[in-house]
Structures are given as C-alpha cells and as structure tokens.
Image 1: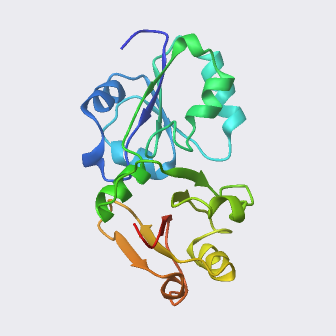
Image 2: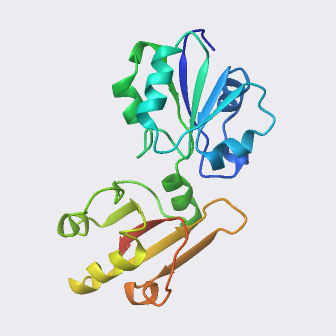
Amino acid sequence: MEEDMLNVVGIGPGNDGYITEVGKKIIAESDVLIGGKRNLEIFENFCGEKIVLGANLVEIKNYINENIEKNITVIASGDPSVYGIGKYLSKNVDNEKMEIIPGISSMQYMFSRIKVDMNDLYMTSSHGREPDFDYLLSHSKVCMVTDSKIGPREIAREIIKRDLKKTMAVGENLSYDNEKITIGKPEDILKIEKYDMNIVVILDDEQ
C-alpha cells in the first residue's frame, strides 16, 4: 500500500468471509479505518483509529482532505462503486491519491443465490429518489437496492397496477446467518407485511 493514500475497500455483502484478501491486507496496514458502525464491528482487532461513518459525509470528507498524509481506509458494504460511497469520494477528494478496491456487491451475491445470470441487467436504487416505474419495468431483468420508502411491497403494487407478468426475488440480510430469499409473483410478495434490509430482483416470466 502506498503512503499518503486513501483506500476505499468494498467488504462484500456482510459476512466477513466475502472480503477479498487484498482488501484485508490494506485494512490491516491502515492507520485509520472509517466505516459504518456495523461494518467497523467486523474489525474488532484493528489496532488503529476508527471513525464511524453515518450522516457525517462532509465531516468525513474534510477529515480525509486534512489528513491525507495518513494511510486512511474507508470500508463500504458490497462494492464501493455500486451505489456506494465510491462516487461521493471520487468527486470530493484528490483522485490521484485514492484507490478503490472492489468487493462483491449484494447484487452479485443475490444473483448467485437465485442462479440467474447478470447479463443485460438494469441496476438501480430507490435510495433518496422516486423511481420511474414505467421505465424501470420496461426492462426484462432489474435489480434494485431498496430503502424504507420504496421496497418490495411498493414495487409489487406497481407491477400489479400495470398488469405485467413478472417474478420477484427479495433477498433479505444477504450473507448473514438470518439470510432469507423469497421468490414469487407480486401477489405473493404482498402477503408478507415487512421485509428486513433487502434488494429486489424483477424478472420477466419467460426468463
């Protein structure tokens, strides 16, 4: 690992067994580790400084820019470049001093679990945005990272409203011990009142 470098490391979908060896090595050699509380708990034996990343993005950006002489690593769930913090940091810190180390995204993990290829996949997220469902559902294969506002039940209703023939797969707590994957028609998805942290795959029925 070079000195005076910010590393952004994807740590996979959750289970620490999915962190790459390259990522583990970079984390171990860092002076400072920045990440969400749940992610930092994975690295309980880390000897350097830990900083919790939450809604304090501007504060974190300023800290990185003011301490670039340190070996700082930001850890991110999944892959930093797939609806992750990689985009924000690449625009707000010196690109010349930043390396992104990819991880296994929750989307990749989900498709491996349902045994469907990711070719010609439309990827999107409902975080902080109102999806264009007409456009989204025009695709034959979709994967959406959801939030508390737009989740499996809301997506199911939009499919039913348009009378489309789709199958949905909902992955909850992916790679954790309490992982759950539900596959069914939109009407089946609506029968479940609440879903934990999840992503949703939407497939045309002929696939």
